[in-house]
Image (cartoon, rainbow, N blue to C red):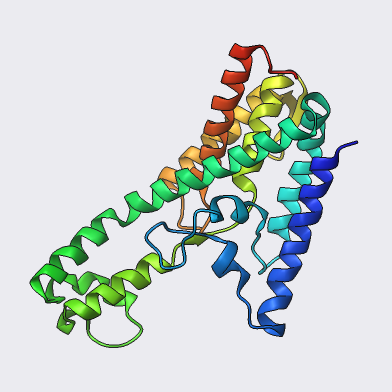
Length: 246
């Protein structure tokens, strides 16, 4: 019986419904507490590296549907091979790894703007920050003093948040390709079945390209790769220990 796969889908579904209902009914913003925030945000908490995995975008049904469909399609076969506890361990660690990579990605993305703000704060003047005027809802950033700039910088840190099981799912995809390398799969733009190992490799390359040169689509492409990376590390260790299949 695939207990882990079933429970992951049920828990994710319940959390998704709660994310829709609670803000309106009780004024509780679950994303603020359970979504993964940037580590310098006022809202960051280490447990979010796990809780964000069970959160999904509530603006559409597609995010949770495709993630949970992937968990059901590939996760149940891995759970059959590994058993419930081992599968849960892999799923959560791949998700945590994806979250860590996302934090590193944010840190890199924000490094230049953080440096610029630090210099402006030290000078007690926002005169050098005119290129960031769009971040302000109102007011003139060039006339802001150190105190206002510190608050604005923190608001920028607070804006970064991600949710979803995609990183953990990409870890599952990698594991499926590793354990069942010759299983035939279809890609939408390739109308012939291809081995799962090639399927996974194509997916990884696409994510890398989108992460480096793709549009600012709000998708955590490097987090997906992080799930694959941490999944690969776990699988390599299990292989060396002779525990890859049990």
